[in-house]
Image 1 (tube, rainbow, N blue to C red):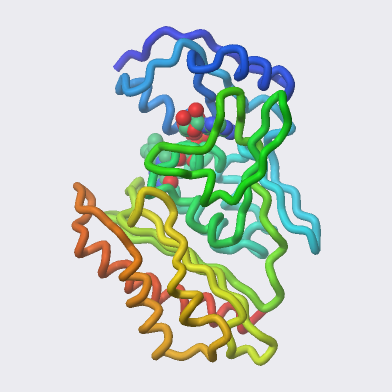
Image 2: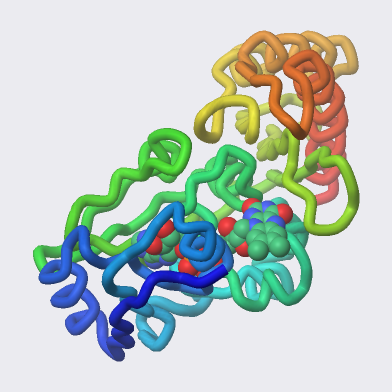
Length: 293
Ligand SMILES: Cc1cc2nc3c(=O)[nH]c(=O)nc-3n(C[C@H](O)[C@H](O)[C@H](O)COP(=O)(O)OP(=O)(O)OC[C@H]3O[C@@H](n4cnc5c(N)ncnc54)[C@H](O)[C@@H]3O)c2cc1C
């Protein structure tokens, strides 16, 4: 499997990167960890004339948390760094857990959190919890920055709202609400290096009585062309006392919203069933975790 010849650029500053991305336009692809892109190049699905490697730019990398304000995660931060970060685990548990479930250790040490969203695979691991946690993305160019919710940035299968000359530079996560917790889970055919047939994240906030749901966000992956934010689950649970009966109704409602397809990994029917299983489990787990905060 040989790739096409290409010219390789490794800018060291954001300015150099924006200049290259703007000047080379459609001729170039942005390269981060390469764990998706290089495979597509080997399979000749994409054959860019130039690669712009953005992993030497300090400003695009790293995890910064400011109490009361939230977290900024640079786009080229490795998935393994997100997985092992103590502050991500403490504040945004679902994200740390999801990052740790990507492929293998080698793949997580190469691949980046930005690449996972820009690849825009419906079964991508980190977009689901990021959307549940209310993450926004910053896309930047020589002309300045644009900010949008991640669910608007991912527009379809392998489609993102990135204009010519732009680079995804960061994710911005709000400070978690008091008495809130997030959880993530997935179902795949095997334990290692599998692609999820359904994944899901729940972020729940409770009232001071520890029983009433103040707000809940449930996001499904691999059951639509992009992360699917449930409208029905918050409509059922917000403002209500948490109960098994309500969880059952919420799981059925999520199943009603999912629009899975049949493919080599799972049938549409199986995916529908798994949506119900994960919704029940995650709502209960996140509720119990929020009671402990
Ligand atoms: C064996 C194996 C197993 C895997 N298992 C999983 C899994 O279980 N779950 C999962 O979700 N993924 C999995 N992946 C996919 C992959 O590891 C992740 O999607 C990873 O996060 C991609 O990041 P990257 O830095 O390698 O992206 P790259 O391959 O460098 O880039 C991917 C795409 O995004 C674009 N891009 C990258 N960064 C930016 C940016 N900052 N701005 C604009 N565009 C950008 C690139 O141009 C390219 O189109 C697996 C991959 C392999 C090889």
